[in-house]
Image 1: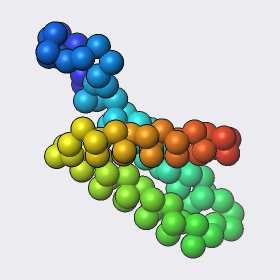
Image 2: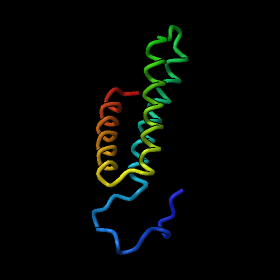
Image 3: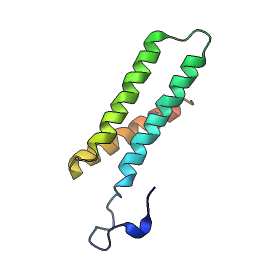
Image 4: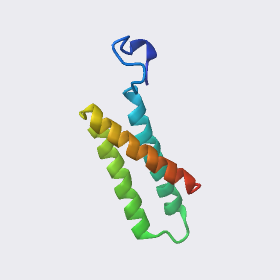
Length: 95
């Protein structure tokens, strides 16, 4: 859990993204895939290929979430932008 009191002070630029924000975006996408997996598994005629695809995409989220730990600012920005765009697309599907 994030503790705002433990955040760095005035050393950060005012427009800096908190370290938690990129992870939050990745985790929101991962949660979407988890919900989609559950829905697909509960479907009366689940599609094995779709299940495999959803699992692979969720695994990709886990790998990218871990990469955030060691990534430089440029890589963090790239991952965050990619996942923000993906989340917007996924949310448009209505699941």
